[in-house]
Length: 231
Image (cartoon, rainbow, N blue to C red; front, side, top):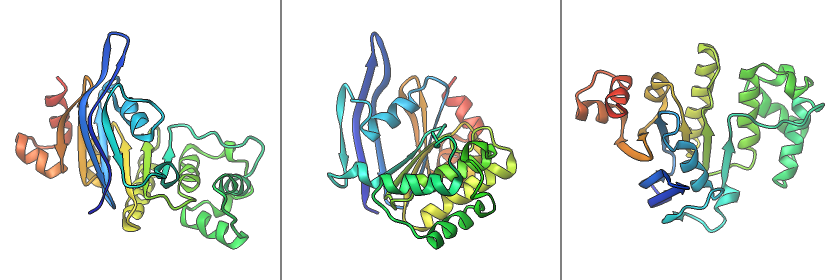
């Protein structure tokens, strides 16, 4: 599989504190990678550096294209939908930002695929949390990115909502889209990720497939492995 991102020896310091400590990350086409860690482990800072939002203090990041920012879709924990505008109108507005013109049928098809057609006239800010998460992924992928980065995409959702998000992530992979997502839910990581990175105090403590890591460290599940590596 083609490498989309190859980051080597990334480091970021805030004053006297090392937040990200000489880490290496590769992301390949069509791969689902989960990044997990305790609060303050450096996950968000790492994602910011990969996006080019936060400058690294040292290390290098190589991208598959010079125009990589146009080929990445990003969903943060809270997507700022336009207040007073419907679901349908929000899709139109975000599409316009990408220079994309969508017909009514094309919008309806996207909303149908994410089970949002029945609420297309509803103000986006009045949707349930699960519906807002699905709408956020729609607007994140309107420009058909090669890489999608999701920051805790199922946080706060009930089991049904979590399952919906997991199915959406798997559909992205089926379309050869790479996905990097952060999560605190080890079951979600086990169900979805091809590879998991466990971070602690700015370092990557483990990097591999969930099954491979559990076998290597002789643990029964990812949660047990997580506790072992972050203690």
